Amino acid sequence: MSQRHLSLTPDDVFRIVRDIFVDELARSRPGSFDAGTAGAWTPETGVRDDGIGLDSLERFTLAGRLNETFGLYRSGVEDNLLRARTLGDTVDVVCAGLDHVDDTLSFYSGGTTGAARVIAHEAADLNAEVAELTALFPGRSRVVVTVPVHHIYGFLFGVLLPRALGVPVVDAQYSLLTGQRRPRNGDLVVSIPFIWERLLPQTARWGEYVAGSSSTAPLPVDLARELTPRLTSLVEVYGSSETGGVGWRDHVTGAGEPFRLMQRWDRRGETAVVRPRGGADSAPVELPDRIRWLDDRHFVPEGRRDAVVQVGGINVDLDELRSRVLSLVPEARDCALRLGSEGRLRLFLAAPDPGGLDREAIGDRLRRALPAVALPRSISVGAGIPRTPTGKLGDW
Image 1 (cartoon, one colour):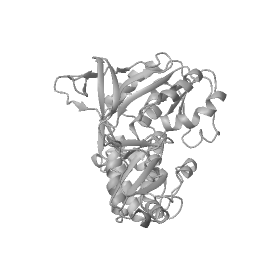
Image 2 (image 1 turned 90 degrees about the horizontal axis):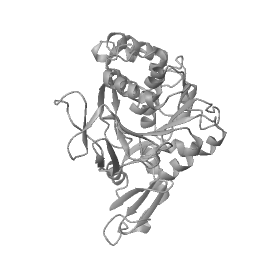
Image 3 (image 1 turned 120 degrees about the vertical axis):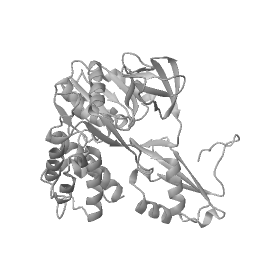
Image 4 (image 1 turned 90 degrees about the vertical axis):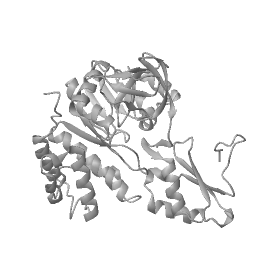
């Protein structure tokens, strides 16, 4: 296989297409689409008058998303997406496009509330990252994937890494949490902190030689401490949709150690900016977090520089969501959102007459307009936003 090509199989493409469909339908049908049904989808599942049953706007949106992700406009097959009647038909169109051009794949950044950005990654860069990752997971017999593969972490670890390791992939995104599948000796379980927390009670029944990986959000120290006795390695990867993997650390062999910068990156100056190896003209990439460098190859992330938090493994921009809530609840003068200890959002509404705010009616209004991951678990009201003596956002 050339390092400049993706060489995706029809099964790879099906999994990516399926997860893009799930992502878009969760956005277009907030509160009414059950993502768990996707576990039963097959290439024969209908996408028009039966099966998924897309309306015309959903069909155009999905066609545009697939066109952008796979770069189908470069091979001229994109119009055929609107003629597809099944997921299998859609996969056939994508594969036909990739037969002509497959040197780039694009990923969408952002979460459910902010405007997503499209980031294109060359196959050579994706394959180079995976070549470095293979050394971190020796002796694996299978890769068990619990995350969507249309995001860059899921794609790298759930599509390219199994192929580089020469082992089969187990698509457990819709089954591992239900106990239908159980990792066995030699498996690598690919997951995220939100799912690792829910898998923790099951890990006592797993095989004795199971490794794990985690990414997309910081792995809580307490959770890592509980997982490490049950895993042979627990590799946490730091990165973003813009960069792919930037650094890694193994909580089993080096608990509490800083992240090691991956070999394909160099530090750029004293800022939180790195660049790919390969020449002085390489464009610097700014990281989303504040970074404390220990030396040129080791660093510690110290929190995001924006208002993005993760809910259930999905990015939610609190600034964007705050604006949206205020447009949906005009009777509120102001509002604030924060992440609760249970990992769900909490909303505080401020109004001149707090008693006039009907929290039940407002909750119904938000449920009809917001995706499930952006819905507040609780709604509090008052005359003003709670603040600490120093003026920071208070607790409620």
